[in-house]
Amino acid sequence: MATITMYTTPYCPYCQRAKQLLDSKQAEYQEIDVSDRSLRPEMTKITGGTTVPQIIIDGNPIGGCDELYALERAEKLDALLA
Image 1 (cartoon, one colour):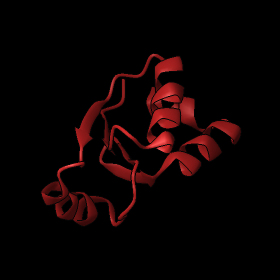
Image 2 (cartoon, rainbow, N blue to C red; image 1 turned 30 degrees about the vertical axis):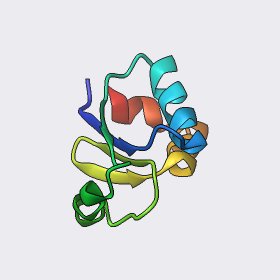
Image 3 (cartoon, one colour; image 1 turned 180 degrees about the vertical axis):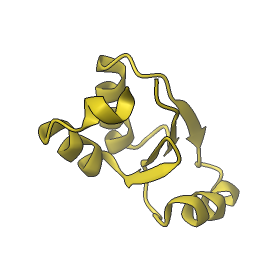
């Protein structure tokens, strides 16, 4: 199974959608809450992104919720999660 890290905030609807998709795939992920803005520079350095969610699969930043769902629509997400 893939190693997944997701930078999120509790009040972000896109974070909730991304988690719902990963949960439906029974994928385990580490969630890092960046509500504490002191953690955001680390997120930006690792992912290049400044908004949440930022999702990393096996060390590769894939982007946010839209990119995650695009992978699902292209039928590429399952292979990344395997």
